[in-house]
Length: 159
Image 1: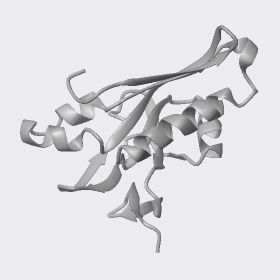
Image 2: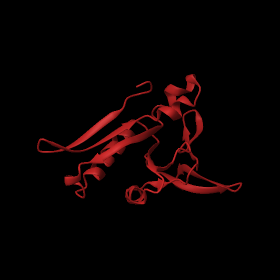
Image 3: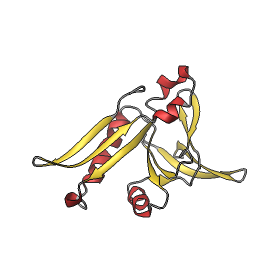
């Protein structure tokens, strides 16, 4: 990968792979920044690129356990936020992420957070998805703010 490493975690039941999660730095977002900033941004966000559980094993908490492990790995590496792109209209998937502490951004709603080099933002890229976003660092929460008629999600220290 051009920026950092992807991570694949699997869940096994006996010899069978029951589920997997693949996370990666958000390459498109990183490439939108000047080359000199890219290395410093690699650990800012982690994208949940793929999370899947084989149908016979669904409903047993496997996806939840995989997601929690991926979040902990990213948190330990210093990532600020985890996000997944959820197709517009995939309400069951949005509910699933909400139950696990994620906030669903409105279409094209920016998510603002602090990095070592200052404030950054990301959004869904206006490509048919919403972002499901979760703050990973202790004491940080996501709050929706309305500013000049537009909303945004801001990751900030819980007061």
